[in-house]
Each structure stands twice: as C-alpha cells, then as structure tokens.
Length: 339
Ligand code: KG4
Ligand code: ZN
Image 1 (cartoon, helix red, strand yellow):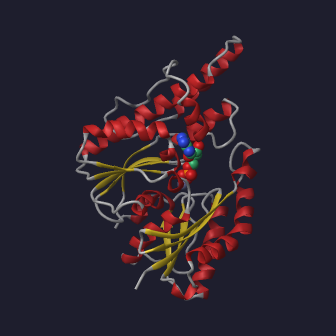
Image 2 (cartoon, protein in one colour):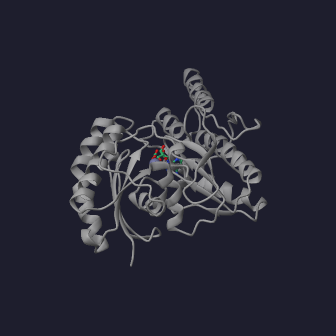
Image 3 (tube, protein in one colour):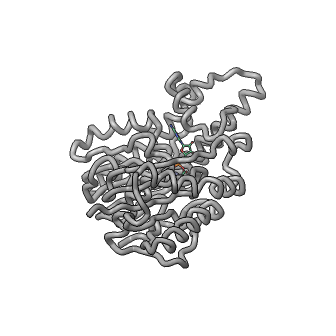
C-alpha cells in the first residue's frame, strides 16, 4: 500500500501544504506566497506573516488534498515544520497539523525546516550516502555531512550573516525590492567583477563562512561613491558581490567534498536557485567526478511543503514522531535530529 503524507510548512512567508507519496513523489504542492505583503516593509514582518498563514492554511490543506485526489482516511501521517523559523508563523502550521492529526487519528511527524531543504533533492533522485549538503537560505549557510539517511552533522556554518541575508541587505542598498537575491543574480549576469570585494575566510582551514564583512565593504563602497557623486554600474556591483559570495561558497564546498568520503553533493535552500552558484558548482565539481552534484529545480529550492513531506518519510520509518504537546522551536538545530 502506498504511504501518503500530508505535509505542512509555515516557517516564514510561504504557507504551503503538500501530499507526498512514498517519500519521493509529489501528488500536490500548494504554495501561497505572501511576499507582496512584506515588500513595502523591506522584509518579512512576523505579525503580518502569522495573519496570512491563518487566512491561508485551511484553504491550502483543502487544495492540496483535492489536487492529490486524496481523502484524509487514505493518509498515513501528518508532517509539520516545527522550526527553525518565526515562532508565530510556525505555530499556525503546527496548530493546523495537530488538529488534523487528532481529528483523523494520524501520527504527527515533526520536521526540521533545514532537513526539509536537503530532502527536496530526494524528490529528484535517490540519495546515496554518505553525502554533503550545502544549505544556503535567507537564515542559514551551512555545510552538512550526512553519513546516512536522517543523520546530520554540521561541519561548517556562517559566523554572522547567512548568504541570502547578505543578498537581501545589499539589495536594499541598491534600492531593489525584497527579497533581492533573484534580481541581483539577474543583474550579475549583465555585469562583471570589476570592484573585487573581499573573499572572507577563504584561506582559513575550516568550513565556516562570514558574509557580514562583504556586506559592510559593499555598503561603504556604495556610500563613498555617492558622497563623491561618482556613478557606479549596478550590473558590475551585482556581479562583483555575487562573484565574492559564489567563490567562497564553491571553494569551501569543494574542500568539504574532498575532506569527506561523499557520493553526492546536494545544494539546497533559497540561494540554491542562484544561477551563478549553480554554474560555478557545476564547473568546479568536474574536479571531483566521483561526486554527483544534485541541485533541486527552482520550484523546490524556495520554501515548500513537498520537501517537508520528503524528509517526513524518513522520520516515519525511524519512528521520530511527536505527540500533541509538540511546540514550535524557532532556533532548533540539526543536533536534535541526529539518529
Ligand atoms: O530558503 P528560503 O526560501 O527561505 C528561508 O528559509 O530563508 O530562502 C530565501 C532566500 C532570500 O534571502 C532570497 O533573497 C534568496 O533566498 N534567493 C536568492 C535567489 N533566489 C532566492 N539568492 C540568490 N540568488 C537567487 N537566485
Ligand atoms: Zn527555507
């Protein structure tokens, strides 16, 4: 019999519900984005996010079941993101998942949002362990070593800003709407790396990152030019910023793949949609032909519930279940999910 999991994601500014068959097949993946409501504030406003989630969650559950042509009685379990994320936003998805699980007597599976990002790749191809994952999103930048299914070891992470956060802050200085990663990526392809911003920590013998120095250097450079009334090329600024981010990410990721006995490299999270990063990794990984590069398609890089359902399949197998006392954990780390 097929295993069908109803998965719910509401950690930030997307309300999403999916039905996933056997951990690898998407029957439905409804994503209601709130970005337009947050854009005029230049970032996600937590209270606004919670309100939107409340309005959308029931509709999304109904739509996901309808599109998947699935009745609640056919489901095997309900999965939900319990962290990391905005606490008010997480609680909406959590409450809906608990109510649904209770009403239909289904097991409740707690899912770490970042584990979900990695398992988006499982919706494309089977995972072959051990593997390395580069997680790059608005809140995280991490290299995660996975010895086996469901085991996560963070071997390196950002000491300050996440890569996506740096994109969004730099975008604000350039007057671009939030979130600006996609637009900077587009502009970067029209310019070249003429300003040579620093490549922080690239020579250091670890797998950590730092992006706040790059952000400050970029902002100071733009402000100084403005004071001198010098015109700068937005395309070259975008290209120079992106070249710095991509070079550091690729360099450290390649070293991590050399240091650990991995079969695959998964790139996940919102910044995995970056074309410059995808191209550079593709090229760099030619040096390591024994490691398969696996980057989910763009629609599975951003926040979505399908990825939550993909990880939930593993959690269900390992019986990592929760009861109805499950609470949101806004800053939960992978340490809690190591098998
Ligand atoms: O994973 P995600 O959807 O949400 C979080 O869990 O944070 O990632 C959102 C982040 C934002 O910072 C956004 O600017 C960035 O991903 N992003 C990109 C691109 N598309 C989205 N950054 C660089 N290049 C892109 N093409
Ligand atoms: Zn995310």
